Image 1 (cartoon, rainbow, N blue to C red):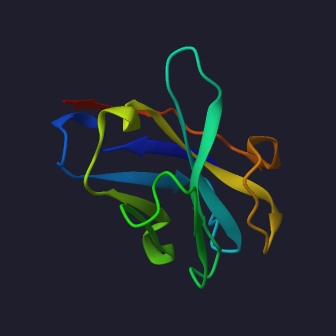
Image 2: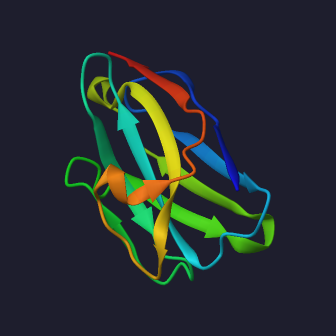
Length: 124
């Protein structure tokens, strides 16, 4: 399966963006999908994840209450709604599929099929 993240852009603090992660090649409805981000010179950090059935989500403390993950398995797409953006949210955002069925973890090493990221830049 191949993933492609899109929807990034240059916005001002307080604005919103909806990022999309589209999968092709095979369905991924049984697998959790994670969103990660990486700022220049920093490690890739977990942002949030959603289970295959969309029954559960988990978020990093830094984005709780501001970001929301959803998925449409019929469209093979996962979304990351980002609200109240801050300059510290500036990063390249990536999506990835968990390697195990029915599990959500926060370790990037547990994920595969990384897509090309999408740049989010938040100006103050």
